[in-house]
Image (tube, rainbow, N blue to C red; front, side):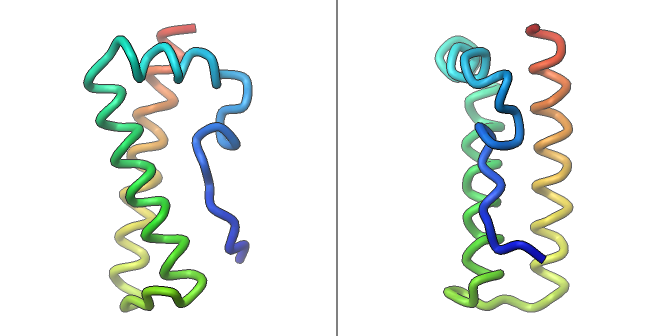
Amino acid sequence: MSHTPHELAEEFPLAVDVMHRLKLEDAHFARLAEEYHEVNRAIHRAETLVEPVAEAHENELRRTRMRLKDEIARILSAAA
């Protein structure tokens, strides 16, 4: 398992400009991106043992990140 954070710019490198625009123009997208960032950082801290958590909690964080990423991808696809 990689301990590299999964930043949105790395996950969607071809949509960086669209993400920036949506963060400014779409409050819902901005909230999703911020929540993704917070969950992603929590996962990274757990993986690197900076803030260890129970395995079940880490798995729930991963599911949340996946759900957020899917919704972000759907919005990006519609915006493209």
